[in-house]
Length: 413
Ligand SMILES: Nc1nc2c(ncn2[C@@H]2O[C@H](COP(=O)(O)OP(=O)(O)OP(=O)(O)O)[C@@H](O)[C@H]2O)c(=O)[nH]1
Ligand SMILES: [Mg+2]
Image (cartoon, rainbow, N blue to C red):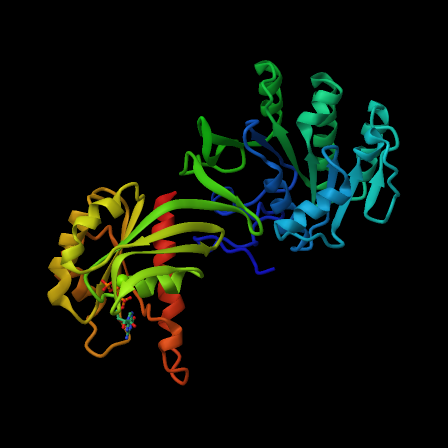
């Protein structure tokens, strides 16, 4: 797996283990050893994919991971992980505290340890603590709420303290997956007070769930509070947890390269075009550095201006695309931005066609567009690679498109 790089270029240098989840790694810089993280979900949303992704990130970075599993069988756990594109490898070890409950026989293997009687508190505790002696970089409990249900909160609490001691002695870290099924507040508060960090996962519910978000409730190893309060995400199969931006608008004058930009940035873009110009809209889904965004492109021709406001509705950010060789179109670009009624949203200006002779320098474009110094301007060559002469590879293409995505995504969370 490719090394995780956040938008800020955060890489796996400072800490092992990492979350492997955009935004969390950028802000919390992974999970330092000796720390315990609670991932607490409301019942309407699942937290298991967070577990899979954290595990996968670590086992593929050569961190040994132990999972205490009481939610399902190891076999279906591994199958489910794989469906999210998180296959197991030799660094993954499981303590099976599930099969014994169902009566299904489970054989010990090098990577699966079986608890014969999961109803026996002492056996559970002793086996886990003994196993942790072997030294794991990360210990995951899936699920901690089931454990509390199965026994009681006072056992869960004392077990948690034992685990804490053990991971401190062994320089490892722990992640506890927890679903709050409406437990007494004091029980939940106690668990939260015992961990170093709590990440909350919730749904946006209006009869149906139409969004899911996560938020950092607390974290004792970063000095400042994270700059985000909550982050929308999607759990994608395959792919896992992606920070999600439902609507980003791409606008700008005719022929500036809006459709080309959307096609360069996404894998599956569609355009409603006629004679080379967009007549309705473009749509493309972008997957970039753990982020997913839906881009919506407007037409550029004036006769379609009534569409601008409609397409701009509910957008959370804007790419304004201009042709770097056509300063005469810049007033039109500003006018279009106004017509989309997206005032106040983060904007990144894309100075496209930077490959052409006569393309203006960045400073000139800024000046001619009267750009506020706070607005990012990125030079791109957005043209579809299939149309480019293969003997003359255009270097700016990927770089520029990625720089633009990165600049806007940073402002959006
Ligand atoms: N040389 C060069 N050509 C480009 C670049 N980007 C786009 N083009 C070309 O410019 C033309 C217009 O690109 P589109 O992406 O269709 O422009 P648009 O902004 O969507 O146009 P409308 O939908 O009509 O407003 C096409 O022929 C593209 O191949 C670029 O970076 N460099
Ligand atoms: Mg177009």
